[in-house]
Length: 252
Image (tube, rainbow, N blue to C red; front, top):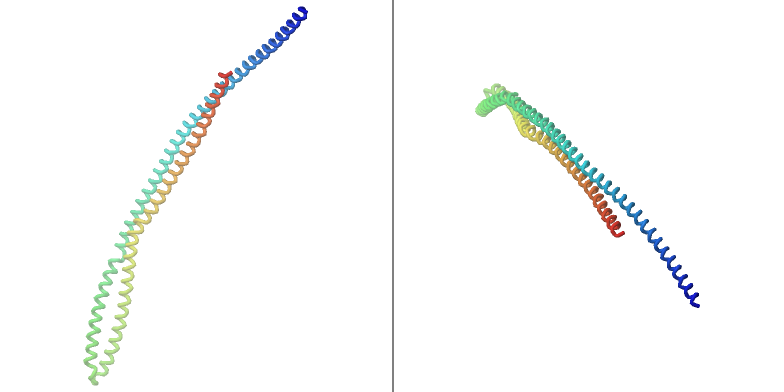
């Protein structure tokens, strides 16, 4: 009876020892697996750190490249603007010279001669009017004298002839007035239109060119901000991944 009791105890101990051995084997396997996982995590962490360093280097190189390109583009744009300004300035000088020539031509043209001719015509017109008035008075005074019918008849035709001359002079004077007025308008337009409208058009084109360059520069700056935000997001993501990996390794 006692022997059976000891055999039962022995079998229970053997079974318990086997279970403990099995547990130790499992624990050893888990420890080995943890070592393997730790090594893999270390390798992954090193790779992430290397990738992070590469991304940082890329960010710095891209930012440096953008700064250099932006500086080159800025210098190039300002050089183009300076060239455009020089061209426009030369064009303005040409326009000023052209305006001066037009003013000189307008003043030198037949303006003085036409004014002189106009004054002479006005004098002739006044003389003809006086002569016409005298003849009209003579015709009225001689209207009742029948002995001078022939003289009155000739005088009537002379008055009609003078009327036609007066009408022709009046027409010539009106034409001269119209020409002088037209020349004054041309001179005024040359003074104002050529002096301001042409220059304003050139200035507007130059302002539009400068505005386009400013808009292009703003687009470059916006693209640069997008690139910076993208690499910052990648950098933050890598930092979070590193923190999780370190936390996992520490907990193991």
